[in-house]
Each structure stands twice: as structure tokens, then as C-alpha cells.
Image 1 (cartoon, rainbow, N blue to C red):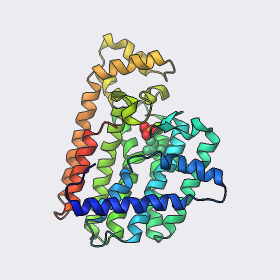
Image 2 (image 1 turned 90 degrees about the vertical axis):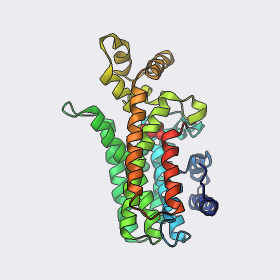
Image 3 (image 1 turned 30 degrees about the vertical axis):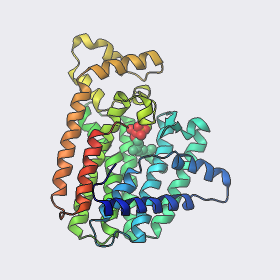
Length: 325
Ligand code: FPP
Ligand code: MG
Ligand code: MG
């Protein structure tokens, strides 16, 4: 993502390098194997969306260069990484960030323990930021796990599946991105009302980010996303484009209903479902929902003082809407 303001772009790039150094230093353990498994996903790259957002948000405050900003950006990335290790076990995913997932390269135990190791290090680091930061991350983590649990259990009969899905993504993705924005504002000394706006912005953009992720799982070839397309279909998870497709499916769409009614393990069936979903209206409607969230996110930015960081956050909204991987 290209930031328009050169001074901000340079400061953010410099900040991301400091975050990267800290991530590498933090996971050095005395047992080389766990360092290796932890570095596996760190070095696989990734968009660093959360630290990027923390660093840009920090430029809304007067002290964006403070060490605590960098530490908090590393904390959110470590938490995110920990959840990815666990998520790939639960989703039986084989690829992540263009590399083999840890569960497929090693096994489920290694992946779960590596997630725990990263979570332990996030906890160690966040302790340096004081009790408020610890409480915030604990609440965030509980919400994230709640979202994951809600997804695992699925919606009750009485609940609209689309509402259920939107709640899940708000919890499992929106909350950590909201905290990324809050930390950026908090540790750079931004005014409390600006910190709140950054939090709300993160919550909304986080949901948009997750829906675009789910669109990518259907719409993109794997070389763009670094994951295997159709992972959600294989896992039997109904994402927003599928829920819309099901809602709109007519009586002649029995095949789509059938394919979405169970986890798919046959490659041919996954391809067939992807083809049906790619040609249907579900993707279009999901893209419209992303656009709606983007509009809300832009509205939250109106509460912030005009500055290059807020312009960059507008760019972040455009990036979220337009991304393909
Ligand atoms: C990705 O969703 C998953 C999350 C954003 C949250 C997962 C949370 C957990 C697994 C709980 C973690 C618990 C501990 C102790 C670390 P996705 O599967 O839709 O996205 P993907 O396409 O990136 O796999
Ligand atoms: Mg997953
Ligand atoms: Mg998952």
C-alpha cells in the first residue's frame, strides 16, 4: 500500500522495520525448534495490516515515534500470528501466506504449541505497556475467542445467518484491529476522543477486511491470496458470499444448496462450488456489504483532525475494498 505523504510513508516504513526487529528478537527462545516454528509464519511475510494500522494511527497523536507504539504494534501482530497457528489447525488449512501452514509442515501439536508460545510472548511484551494495555488485550483476546467459538457452533435456528456471520467477524477480526488503532492513538498521546474514533474505525474496517478475505477465498487464484481457494468450502464454513448465494438461491439451484450443505473434500466438487459462486450474485452482494462498511469507516474519520495520517487511513479503506490478496 502506497502512502501519499512522503514523510509519513518514511516514518511508517521505519516503524515497520522496528516492529519486524522486535518480532524477531522476541521469539528467540532457548529451544531452537520453537524459535524455528515461530519464525515460520513471521518470515512467510504477511501484510502486517495490524501493525501498519497502529503506526498510522499513532501519527494522529503528537508522539508517534515512541517505543511503546512499536511495542504495541508488535503485540497485536503476535496475537494475530498466534491465532493464525490455531486457526489453521481448526480449519485444517494447508497453506498460509504462500507457505505451508505449520500444521501441515509439522503437525497439529506443533502448530498449537507455537500459537501458545507466540501468545506467551505477546503477554510478556504487553506487560511493558502497563495494566491498561494488559486489560485491553485480555478483553480483546476473550472477544476474539468468543467469535471463533460462535463460528464453530454456527447460528441458532432463530438467528438470521447473515446477522450471525456479521457478529462473528466483528468479534474474531474487528476487535483486534480496533485494538490496533486504540493502541496507536493511546501510546502516541492522542486525545481520548480521537483514540475512541480510531478504535471505532478499526472495528468497522476490520469487519470489511474479513469480508474481503472471505471474498478472496472464493474469487482469487491462490497465487494472489497465498492460501488455497475454497478453504472455507472444504471446512463447511458459510461465509458472507455463500450466505447471500443461499438466501437468493432459487429452486433450480439445488446443486449449490447441496454443495454448501456439507464440508467438501472432493477437489472436483470444490471447483464446481467455486464456479457456481463466482458466477452468482452472492459475491456482488458481499462486495456491496464491504462498500457499506467502508462508508461507515470513512465517516468515523470525520471525527479526527485533518492530517496526513487521516489521509493514509482513507487510503487504507480503499485498499481494503480493492484488495485481491
Ligand atoms: C481467521 O479467520 C481467524 C481469526 C481471525 C481468529 C481465530 C481465533 C482463534 C483461532 C482463537 C485463538 C486462540 C489462541 C489461544 C491463540 P478465517 O479462518 O476466516 O481466516 P483465514 O482465511 O485467514 O484462515
Ligand atoms: Mg482459517
Ligand atoms: Mg477459521
